[in-house]
Image 1 (cartoon, rainbow, N blue to C red):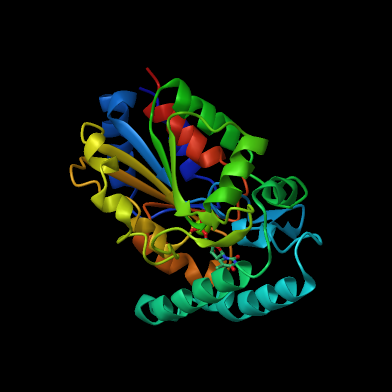
Image 2: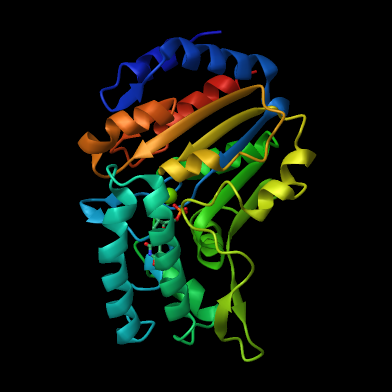
Length: 293
Ligand code: TMP
Ligand code: MG
């Protein structure tokens, strides 16, 4: 097996690897076990989607609803106010997670309560996605198609909005049968108006306690004991906590903002850290190696 490609990646300035021997041997082990043993768990916003495109910040699932004039002005103003308060706190490496959790619950609760007052309809979501700046990373379509072709399960675990992210995938890629989405899904009344969200709220720091970990999802995939985890936040590292029968796990983190301040923290948590790269190139190169037959 040739690892020159991985060696090439390692030498790229924006790719940071704490323990090369561990990464190399994990990649070798996953490749040896083959696609039948592999599963992928990925976050959505700023992991499967871009943070920036041509100098402009792209929308997250929530922000899709704030763009354009689909929803009332008061919503855009209030949602922006909330993001301006809470997003810097989410991304601040000097605020401990224990302090961030109540703040994130506050943000999601306020944002979701606000959304429920806007009269969103199911049909309007597609229009909003079509005209928004949300963008899957370059190479995401290849990744989805490749995983589907090899029948490798992909769990997308998102604190965004399920109804929005599914539209993004349907419009910009294909929602394949091997993909499962766990996210915040809206509820609609009999007149098709959004009135709230289903079940337990998922925010960026409770991806370890969500219902997916008590469901059959991971136990049905017990034979797939190799996991590739993709995230952009520290909370994303808990997305595969429900998989108890794990042999090899490789975690890849996208560091999109506050790069200098956060690099040390990210390198202490993720096996591979990719800085300010809006593509899936590094992930896809690794995927090609671990699935080369
Ligand atoms: P993720 O888990 O798929 O990455 O989604 C969470 C992101 O959504 C997180 O980085 C913050 C963002 N967000 C907004 O942009 N606006 C909002 O109103 C809320 C609640 C979250
Ligand atoms: Mg994210």
